[in-house]
Length: 154
Image (cartoon, rainbow, N blue to C red; front, top):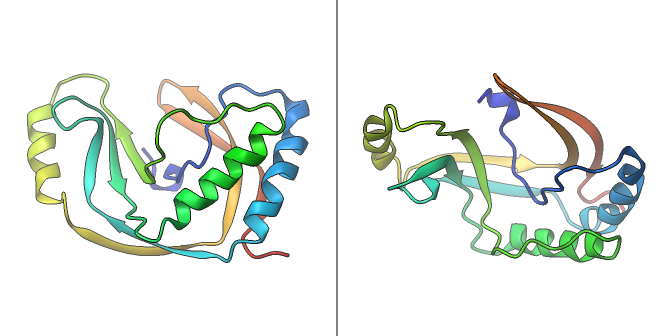
């Protein structure tokens, strides 16, 4: 995955109609704009569904103060009002680094991942929420920015 494609997902919509973009943007504006920008720590590496069966390789975003979880819940609530069902799994903030398409190289990858399971990689400052369109291609996803709302814009 290209570094510029790494992102934190707050809500995955699946297929939506172009006519829904404005309503989605309006639904997320208030919860995002009343939230100050956030400093996010990047720590640890892991896999979904598990390290024994890695399909998605991720880097962790410890959320001790539950800031990201709180924003995600508020967004889910607002989006539910316009017809989007909330996620039924607990929210675990992470950055997806890549996907395992086969087991080739799995043992070597897991050995390398083990070295960084508790490593702190630094932090970044999140200033906005972006609504992306994702087009899946054989070489990977291509993301197109549709709308953005800045934190603390009220």
